[in-house]
Figure 1: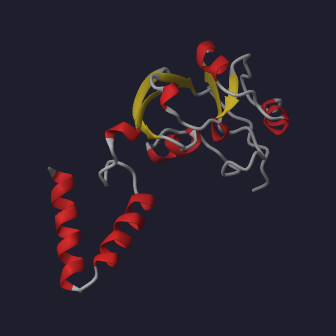
Figure 2 (figure 1 turned 90 degrees about the horizontal axis):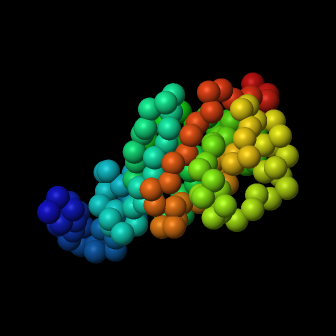
Figure 3 (figure 1 turned 90 degrees about the vertical axis):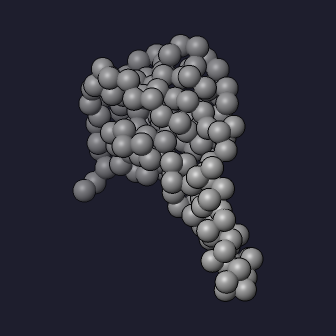
Length: 154
């Protein structure tokens, strides 16, 4: 109901300005600039994910196609990502459950090189910037290590 009301308000604003196209543009810009909590993302597009941060579970809804790093940042989970997902650091290192790790495509060589620098490396470690959310990952758990090695220059 709240989504329909918001769409009606935007539509009325655009109609009062004589432009239906501007309403569509407003929706597109808004949907890309905000989280699903602010704009009405379809529930089918949301994937439940659990981050384990300092021993506490943080349950979030993630948009398909986003990286775990982007999802963490959008939900105030403290996954650093010093290089902004450019595969130049290991600060978005997460530890996955074995079944999730095995279901993912194998890491590329550059990711493996960065993982060599990761703090608390395990056999199921991956970089959050390289894992794209999909429906197949629904219910997954990603544990944040207790620290990170930030080798990026200040």
